[in-house]
Image 1: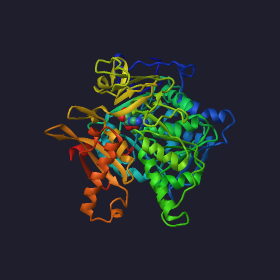
Image 2 (image 1 turned 180 degrees about the horizontal axis):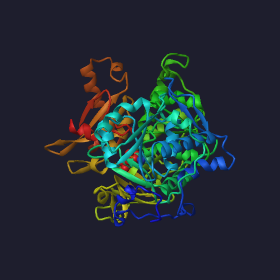
Image 3 (image 1 turned 45 degrees about the horizontal axis):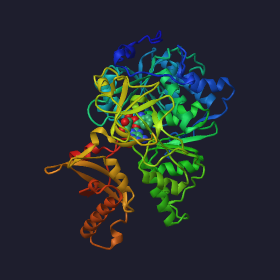
Image 4 (image 1 turned 90 degrees about the vertical axis):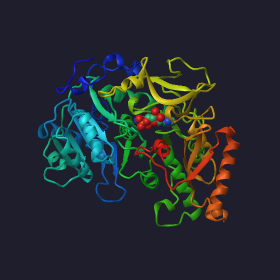
Length: 569
Ligand code: 3UK
């Protein structure tokens, strides 16, 4: 390890022992990193130094609530804001290199400036999802020993509650606030220049907490060089964005999918990022049109919901007014659409293509790996498959002993590359990293052409009557039925078969009424019809023996289905 710039060495002191790290490979010439670097230099300051400071870096859109929309900052302005905040952190709030600084807010230009300020002062960003409550914030504060927080004034309440219980959090400064001691007022008095702390390339830059479904959240530690490494792998080889691109999307900056897709990747090519405070499918559609966005990042279900809204708009007539979801939206600016966070069903890829003419880019990423490691380009997309290892990464499908399974057999996905899993003080390190490989917890197979085909989370595989059934494959088949809006497939206990396949289905608005039957008769007929439909699409033994209709499905803030909740019920 290189000489640290951290005066507070908590992060280094709590890295896993070196022999528990995954193997790291820096195979590409662009992955040769110097001993000392601060990632904000490469992503932000560089553009100003190169005379590109007048380009637009970030655009804020509050969806019309008037709190902070309308901000457009050039690279020079974003740098000036970040520098002012860096000065506040050091001279007003007493932050020293290595301190953990919690960031809390919706996706906004101010949040982006705060993130860079934390990088610049050599502190460690601990970004948190806006929806977290005091209890979860408290777990993060305690685990990462967070001493300072920068928090959007709109979200101050839960943080104040958490702070009352965890006095390790000494200072909270509110941004987007008119208060005399708010961040804006403090920043106003500071200089727009700041000399970045000369961090080591292996100094920790961020601790990202997993959106864990159960148990204590895990903090994943990523270095300054990791931030740049992810910018030089997937975006360069799969996304291939340009400096005139306008990025937009839904994942929070606190989710590394969003941090990369909506901040690091656009800035790494000198492009523009539109940061939306509200990014539900209903809000995303008009925002794409309004900002003439060219690159979109969101989850598979969000693409599906956007298609539904577009289709509803088209049938009700483009001239209709009122709710935005009822309007036809001009999406012709879009060039590239990225899907991640969950498997992309072939049916959803096809729907999006039929609606927009665009082939989506799917990629599997993980908080532990920082970003995407198996993916493809538009040209090499294969419906139902995630793709191939991203240049810079290696991937295999292995058995419990870490040996490659035969081609075409289902096993565990194992990956390694320039980034990898380093949990903050957590025994679960030994579960994620085995024999030097990161085990993501996903069941995959490799097809005859070397494509990686997602099956399920390993603990979501259903074993029924001796057969292994991957829930997502059944979900894909269900999604192709014209009445199905959303669905989730789980295994439920069954005396005879061990488990049976059960589907929870959200129907499209008119799926039953259209039949003219009574509700009960209509539901029974539809269940039978959907079951027959699945049997005709995939091997009949995989069909859902039980189907339950729901108004909605439980999801995390990052858009993932919470199958465990459905199993519990
Ligand atoms: C699942 C996928 C199939 C998979 C993430 C892009 O999702 C991200 O990180 P998380 O830590 O979850 C990781 C797990 O999510 N998954 C993600 N993408 C796909 N499954 N196809 C996909 N395309 O189970 C994985 O192990 O929340 C995604 C970039 C950064 C991220 N952190």
